[in-house]
Length: 265
Image (cartoon, rainbow, N blue to C red; front, top):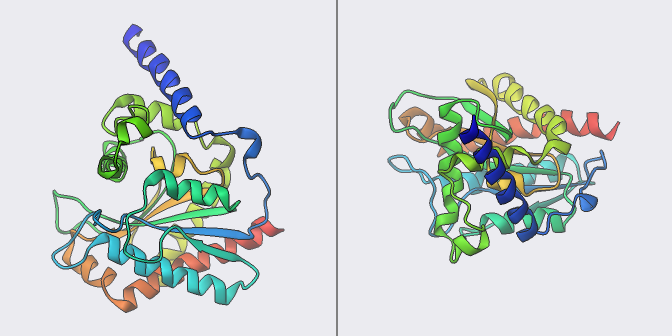
């Protein structure tokens, strides 16, 4: 019990330190309901290729899906301002991705990724994450992998105030944030997974919660979408194809349309 208490206290101290470092001001949170600005984040990029299959790189696949999704949203909802954290193969630090969304007063943040597992070449399906405690070891491993991007940044120890992606403190600390937006984030995430099933007949692994740094620092409803497993040959071929990327983007678009209608009303 004492050990747990010490971990919680340490996590709280780390959370306060990080909050100060990133100048998180609750008064500046974007709490309006209408969806006017969407930021689409293509995960990884540049020297950070993310996970990979035999041919495909996560950074390239995520970028193509992100650009396709943005194009579809612009066509369907010309009143919505669509912004990208990156639109070329470049490395953007995690802190800058969320800061970019915050600076532009985004109403929704969508981070696009591809999944991987070293234990099987048959695992398939989509997962959509919102901020929260790691419910399973699988969720924890996904979060660790995505958060480890900070290790590729210069002076990451100073920037992230000693944040360690592998530390149990990280899960507790990150879970304390995003509470103001969890309901809307879960709503959009649920729409995404439902549309993956109905629009593109994908296998959905459901909506999950984990401590992703890129979601924690955003001040709006935010999700991280794992579009499929590059470690599974069939899914890699699908995600690396123009048809597959278009279907993934279309599924997310249909989820966005339902979500936007609900929030605007």
